[in-house]
Image (cartoon, rainbow, N blue to C red; front, side):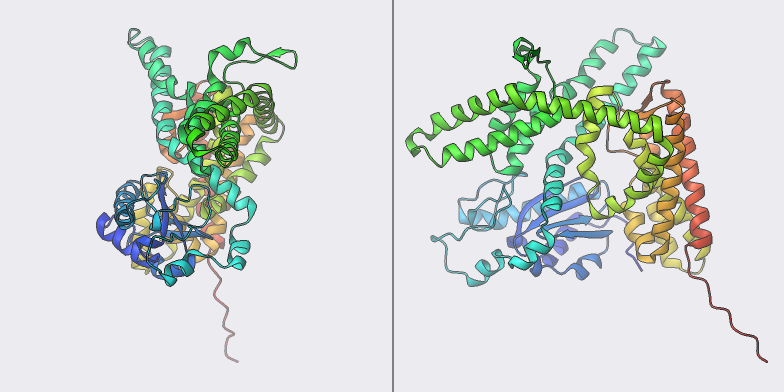
Length: 502
């Protein structure tokens, strides 16, 4: 039976996790999202996945070559990540020359891996055959697990996941400000609240640039400097292909491309200039070349892509909203299970920048409703399975608030069929919301991260927040009902009939 998702002691959990992933020396980077501890391992073969899954408090494990995601749940993951990062940093510190990672931890032997390469042997360190062997992954394992698509999605997610807390906070403040404006309450406060809520989104390109450079091995401030070109008001004086650029054109996609180019240029220049001139020439050439390329190419191209994304989303919901909702709501749980759902963050962010809300998130959130309905059906059907019912009672509040991993890894996925019937519930809820989009009523979210009942404060739409909330609630209850019914009727194997004795 799955583990009880009750929160264990964070220090004990961190110690147990590190013991089962090959020790702190085997960890090359530490990060986390809302529910998952994300580790990069020098040698995945040194980790014991089965023992890791068996730990109390571990709700699931997702592996993709050197990238390991350990599902711990909201709140718990922050504490455990801090403990793990401290232990990894302490292990690297004796070398005296570790390069800083994204989260401030150090690498064994002092070689940072911001671009995903393997650690280099340090000739000044004692000969350690085991460490060198474990740092070199078998080429076959690399080809099988680190496919280009998976690697690209994972690294894009690493850029945007750290931005989610700010997106949530600013989104909620934006919703509160909108409520105050509509009701006429506290008119003296609304301008200040609007500035606080909108400032982050106005400068999000800079944060994307910093994170992109960190992820791909460049200097973070240079990535931010080049990405800042995208939102600088002075770009309105630049003419490209006969049209004037607009500040923010291309949005986060343009910032991502600009910072990635800056990282490439920086590495190229740094490898060719004398060390004495590196501090002067490398940043100057990086900002100049990447900045001009951003102005005269990337902003225009990224703006076209962003416009196409917005137009495609609106067209899809207007013409095939119910079908799109069925598809998106039904397939989102598998994406969450694989840890690939974070790769959708740039699309959500682009839609929020363009339209003020993302119309895709309410559709995808229906997957959690199907999961809740399926878990309730399992609770009713398996009356004598005390351990499983205890797990469901513990994980259900998080599921209602849109955190699906405890129910996925603790209930539906181990049972098999309930996972599929939960997807059916999500598809039904998504179809419900998508149907109203076909009728001209769009439901969106002003920020990303929360779902389930936690998404209500962030809802918006072209008919106002009240209508959006009503449609979203209808989708949730549809997902609950269909997920429950499908699981109750089809989520368990039928007992074979025993022939009556002759």
